[in-house]
Image 1 (cartoon, rainbow, N blue to C red):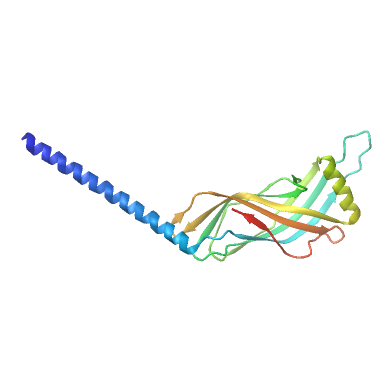
Image 2 (cartoon, one colour):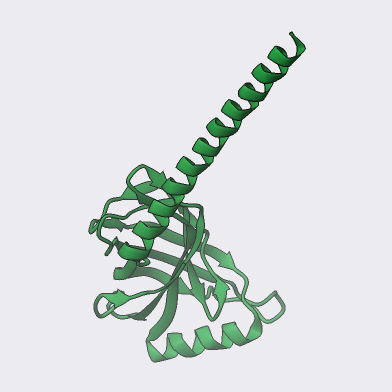
Length: 203
């Protein structure tokens, strides 16, 4: 009786061990397949282009000497396109923030772009309005603004910060940080960039 029970316990443990080994082998095979697919497909980071940037306002309201230094007012509409150049790999864009930067300082409120999915070779376009009201600037940036207002042209940057995920079949990768930097050289007389500008992208 005791030997019979021990034998059944032994067989049960063997069965459980085989089931666990089978599950681990299956999971390992799936992970290996995904890794091989990613190596073969070689995911490429998305390509961003600043298609247009319209500057409606960029000025320093007059300020008497006895008051604090003037602050910057800015209104811009930026048209950005994102292209997924991959074959067979989709991209999830999550929590994207778009804002304007001047001389390394954020000068507009961040606009949140709704989450979206981009299939392979798809192009997505966003055209957010970007506002900066009474933005304080350090002395070096104030001097630069005054100089550029005198010359009639300004160098701004449209920045995108957020997160992306890769999708292969039903598998979705972990989250990667996305940083996009788009130069925008704008002549104040026309208020537009001269043409589409390729953006720097880091993932």
